[in-house]
Length: 207
Ligand code: IMP
Image (cartoon, rainbow, N blue to C red):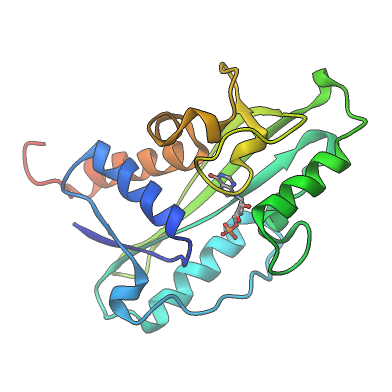
């Protein structure tokens, strides 16, 4: 079963492919590059679901009829910052900034926050668009804490400054195999795979 992921983020494509492959080898994730490229989407909504819907609809507008599309809008919510950066995670330090600049800004904002108040979560909102046009939403989170300095060079975005609950290392130190078992994206996409499996009979009879 072929599903297009409505993103230009190669890290997301790699992660979602890896996550879904571990659920079933019937599910295959494809880049929008195969059907003309992901259109530019201005993320004008103030919540993850709204922006995820904008992305899925933008790809639908240029995709061939009858394809399955999924989008992923995600971000980091820090309790001590009242949920920031949230939907602004990609552009926290400004437009066209690097992940290092976003991380540096977040660590600066958190300088005075004590260790027991550094809780945060990654959130993933995935919208699956059926060929019929019906949308199905899968949303989940990964709880953890913000470190005092970046560590590790795997993953992307805020991975070097986030330690997931139950671990002593950042996601960027834990690496892709662990990340794709515990992340917000892994949780939401596994729910999506489960839904496809049991409601759409997507994996064929008897599976
Ligand atoms: P989006 O592409 O609009 O969903 O923006 C997502 C932003 O949230 C990314 O640019 C990252 O800054 C952050 N983010 C989302 N998922 C992750 C993740 O798995 N690890 C680290 N940062 C993430």
